[in-house]
Length: 430
Ligand code: 4AD
Ligand code: MG
Image (cartoon, rainbow, N blue to C red):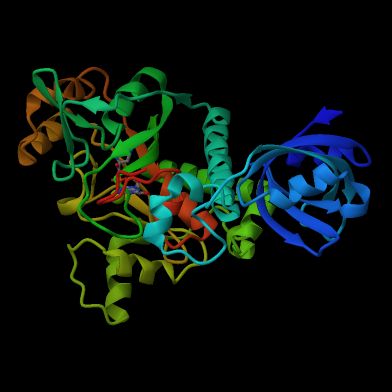
């Protein structure tokens, strides 16, 4: 008899298999017990018929409680009515452990309670579906860059300087020196692009943001491609192709999980390149026409982004923001230096900014000037200035926030469900 997973039962129709699993739920009609089983790969119903099993097997089934662990033995039968397409006719049960007083019951629990029990909450069908989609998104991201001539490069996590401003740095001691957890690997990826051409990183980033919103995590994962000899316009084309690829790969490979989440798949199916573009100037006019008191030079907040995104059914690039509130490394537009060659990609349906990117300053004089204006200590950044001294070239890059992308594709209210163990303001447990 073969041991298999629930995902694999389709290969064993008509045969008896043994599956390691947990009891998710149970119904009984007196003569028949219906066990809802899960093993991480899927869910299956196992039927125990009193007249067809031995007394000890019937008793073992009767004793099973929610989240008890067991090996079940039974014959795989095709069953068009069941979600998996198969059912198990039980002939044997080996109980591993009877689970007592499992704290998450099918009744509604508050979010704080569920977050305190995140280590168990992950077992629910909905949380499982999110983790499966997250893994598919990661696979699609790596697949896209690996197939398009990018080399994976890992920037450091402990750094002596900041990339995205000094206000939300996590400080730590590095022996006798000060160090910070990385906010973005970008500056290192620029060095890597000068060595390898087209590169991307995929790693955790940390921002000590005191904001408690449904889009902010303290620890999140970012994908940061950086490309030599690629300008702002060329970078946008790569971004839209990349994002379309990721969304369509989830649509193609995660039908069941999207269904579990109740996601409207038609909204995802239309996400195909090219994406619409709107300049910051036009976005400001659009907001003013719709009654927002907004002046040129301010940064958009979440309600502004949502209002702009609502005009489109695909993600939209907002381009050419004022230099005044953007990062020091962004290249000014040559004919209008008060704006920069940058774009944020705003997801539809109110999910907000998923990508921030720009062409980088390649001029050695201008980059030095920016360092002075932004009062960046030259010591920590000396190596970065070298990149503009020894064979500087036009180059661009961007950063995709993994969790915001997962929230959008899964259709989730809050980013806290997009990562196995979220780090939030006031939450470091479990
Ligand atoms: O726009 P950001 O700050 O850009 C950078 O860090 C650039 N250095 C990237 C680059 O060009 N290589 O962050 C990029 C993305 C955002 O668009 C957002 O999706 C995500 O990272 N992000 C967050 N996600 C969750 N929680 C937070 N606190 C986030 N902050 C940024
Ligand atoms: Mg940004």
